[in-house]
Length: 186
View 1 (cartoon, rainbow, N blue to C red):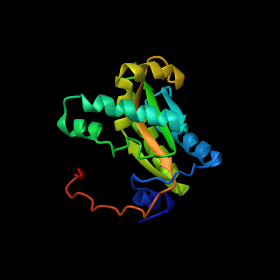
View 2: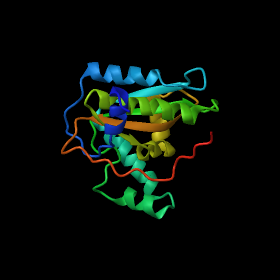
View 3: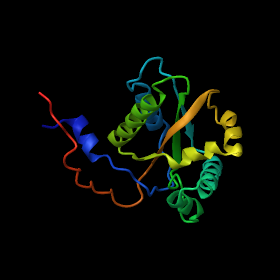
View 4: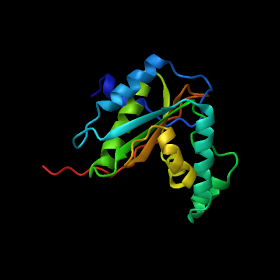
């Protein structure tokens, strides 16, 4: 069984190589609006910070890598020290998804909103990637100080990020789905 929505879900892949071309304001508005229609535990206690400033993105990348390089997890430290690694894959647009830390559903609410961002982007032919690494920038003192500059509300935590842009190169192919992940109880 299939339809347009199911086709978009099956087609969407995380892209980690972006062209420098910016997405249109019209597409960006539609994508962010789709996020606001995500299911939530009540109160829509999320906030979306859209960043298209290359200097700010570079600063967030630097801070995330700084934190990772000293975090104590060897694999994460290796990425933090890798000069070739870029935590937002040079995407021209990054959307930070924050949630009210007092909301018990904040993590799941922001995840649902992030999924809507990704699916809306795919439906418009825009490449995307769900990201966590760059959120580590806000674990540093400098990153905490940037929160106000970025308009992140007081008491909100950045849970996820979404990178958006035009794909550089071919679309990634879907990996085989893992077997044994569904149990039916009827």
